Amino acid sequence: MMERLNQRSRSDPYGSRINRTQSPLRAGSVPYLSIMLGSLLPVLLIADVMPLVPPLGFLVLLAWRLMRPGLLPLWAGAPLGAFDDLVSGQPFGSAVLLWSLAMIAIELIEARFPWRGFWQDWFTAALAAALYWVAALMLSGAPVTPELLVVALPQALLSVLIYPILVRMVASLDRFRLARARRIE
Image: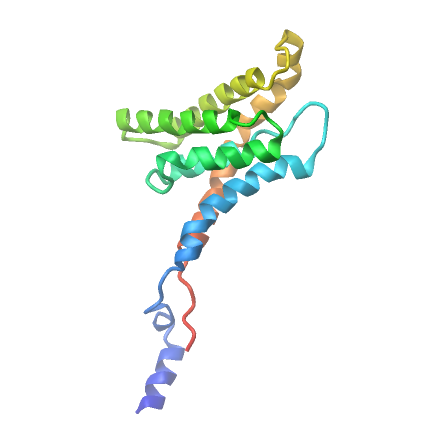
């Protein structure tokens, strides 16, 4: 009798998914690790005089926050910004301040406009990325000249245009995060 039940459960396509739970480690760590990897990628990929790669860590933070509003706590911008400051070379505290302010601003926007759509999220992320870009330039200590703004403008435009791609990647990571772990029998 027991052998027949085991045989049936192996042949049943839905029985293999019953009684599985999500991995708490994966569910809790994937958002933070992906944001930290986003902070590391611009440093690892290109070393140049002018930064052309957008602040991927900040954009991934925005994607997680706008896609899953309750997932990241409001204070998460401070430690993730500190990590970004350590790897990016910006003055320490600039990303801590800017990422925390972005998290607070998004929280206020969501309290005011609880109905959100893709276009509103993209506009919010584009505005946040543009403000972050200008504020990071000012906090970097470099003299802000019109020539510097023109040369660094492609980074700001790429930040706005790459957001939908990052949202798709974050959605894939979210599916991986919520996937059920296999039960070992």
